[in-house]
Amino acid sequence: MSWRLIAFLLAALAIVWLLLVAVFFAARPKDANLKDAFRLLPDTLRLVKRLATDRTIPFGTRLPVWLLLAYLVSPIDIVPDFVPVVGYADDVIVASLVLRHLARRVDSDKLAEHWPGTTDGLDAVRKLLRIPAPDVNG
Image 1 (cartoon, rainbow, N blue to C red):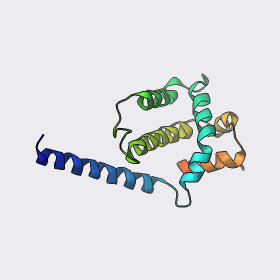
Image 2: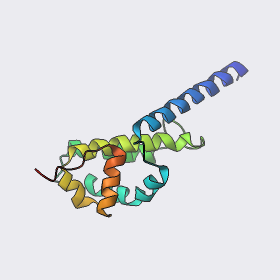
Image 3: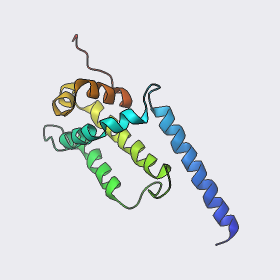
Image 4: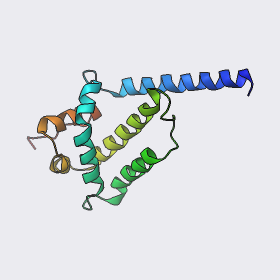
């Protein structure tokens, strides 16, 4: 491999990394932090599993979750997982987009029904994913 090709590949990787970081920071709420996201991870994973296997939700709505699981298990990624920080950032971004898609298409009561954690935890997930809170007046 020539040094020019190596330099080009490194520059391309740096650009992809910067784009992923920009997308992550643009998509996250201003008062959210990584600690909160990690704290909610176990309950969020249970929520996704429960929603994905709920046969009262149309299959077309649940399909992206199954595709996400295949993507996460697959050794082929947008950015390989061995690349520090960025390797998992693409997984987090794709997962949050799929979860947002699913959560916006199911009834708010369905989210609450399948949420295994506290009400505050569900409110935090809604806030992180920018999902509107349910209208309690209507």
